[in-house]
Length: 64
Image (cartoon, rainbow, N blue to C red; front, side):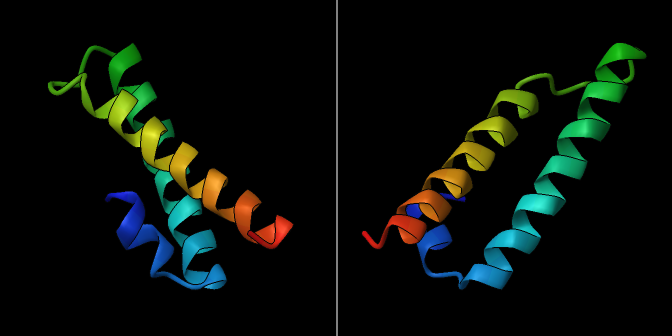
């Protein structure tokens, strides 16, 4: 997801997406540790989307 799609979501949907992505990141890390993860590039991609969501939430909280 890019920032434009994330900005279109409201606060509740954004929060739900954040929870979902954090669960996915946990599962990816677990799979990586047990050598079951095939696409290791998914981990940094999920981290970037999480960072985008947190940035958007911070901007909205500051009123920007």
